[in-house]
Length: 593
Ligand code: DGJ
Image (cartoon, rainbow, N blue to C red):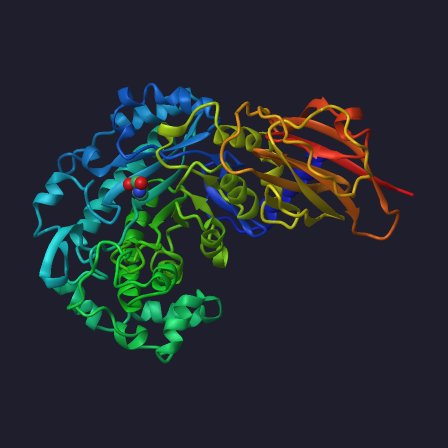
């Protein structure tokens, strides 16, 4: 019945919700389910438990050889690997696809999916992966100019030839991927460019750019802002309204003054004359928004053309990633100005409708805050770069309906014996039921620190009270009986070495995803710490809740397989539910009086 429930949920999703792409052929595409957007591969939602390789790690098959088995041992089902424009098109019109083919074949051999990163015109703002034949021809492929008229190695968005050359190469790549992988669907998504935006100044000050900046905000953008007035990002709306909510005018008339050319741009914003207060708060404010909005529009238009051309070659989901504004990089130009950051998501949506996902490179400690800002207005959530923080993987997947989670430089940290591997293991065991409920109110995620008071979560027809009990495997010796629902003191520090097999690492935290999968039925899984779970009924009727089936197990080919059926000592003689670290569970409950 569990599976029937899941199947029903999936079926409802596919029949009632508009789709972003093809469905019939099994080609990867995005599909809405409630508030979530999921990546569908071969007709099924796919949860990308992945990592991003270092920039140049996948530049040869030889270099990749020892890495593939480690990715598999780290319980990953997908990997993000860069394709460099320079390497793929060493001479104009001459394409080299042997490496792409080899990566696809190796991924297949290792049963992994691939997300390719197209390092085209830009990588971390700059243009280091553009081919040398592009870099040499600076008249045909112009650079930006920063304060004082200086050019830097950063292609200008005001270079149609650059855009067209990039789009041509990208289309050739996508056509080729379709040819070699259009049936097998190893490549499930593409990142287009990398962390675009102007560095070292708040905007491009080339002649063409300055002319456009002094001209009117394009009508297309003004219309979009007016049509979406009610849902605009509050930061953008505030800038627009505080400058008079104009419906036409130059960039500075509509969005206020840009940075004067005379103001120098520091590399970072972490030194005096910034006060401590400015340092803490500055990165949450907009500075010279006219410049940033102008650049966002121009990057969006350029990237949209590249994406459109790529999709004409092979139409699979495509995203762009953003280098975030942050304490040391608070002013546009210290972070790439115009990249797909939350304050300019509306501008990106207006200028780049072909882009499916605006994604954060999320290294900041404020994971929740950033995730919330990136999921406004239904933007699908995908974290292409982050640190290997297992708790955040749970948050991303359970709370923000992520398509996937992907620590950067994965070849350095991946392995079988760490918290990420354990988290990926348990998330993959639970993936079918998580994916069936993402985007609905039948799924919840909790994150608890040692010492936290119990937390309550309303789920299905019950309220679940959760108490932190510690990391690792909890003792299986008899524990003092207590009725379900009563708060328990945490047991003596739980033994290390839960199913992930790792010793204590990271902060003492428990993170869990809880799913109400049907009436009186729950699935739940925990990361590196365990939890006690007690149920209180939410509907009138008998007040006492009993534990029915308590099963540790996993989904295999969509079916729940029981590994341990629990009772007796492991459930406090039927009265205490313990969700152990790195474990997935199915639990049924009943009520009596
Ligand atoms: C963010 C970039 O997008 C990556 O390609 C890489 O350069 C990392 N920073 C390095 O930390």
